[in-house]
Image 1: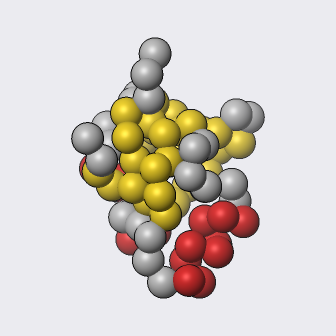
Image 2: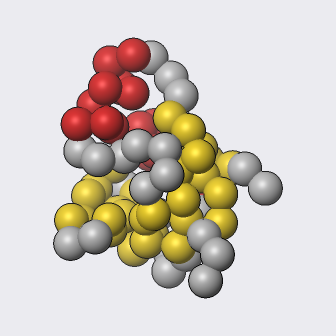
Image 3: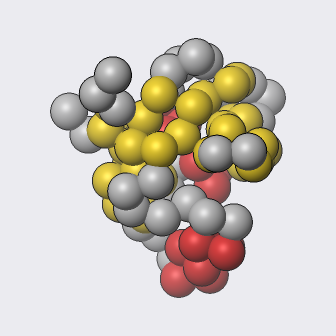
Length: 75
């Protein structure tokens, strides 16, 4: 089931399925490594969405996280 990163729960592991939205925001997400196929671990969802990818921890504004389409990661 596809949904938005902004709807993920803390502690969840997810895979980026797509990045949608205005080109500038897609480019901004790509520049920090948020690309289709990347696995993320959600650390928190409020007040901002904090995700970990490999050894990198990123804090994303909720509007930006809303542009990221995710699927659940298989364990």
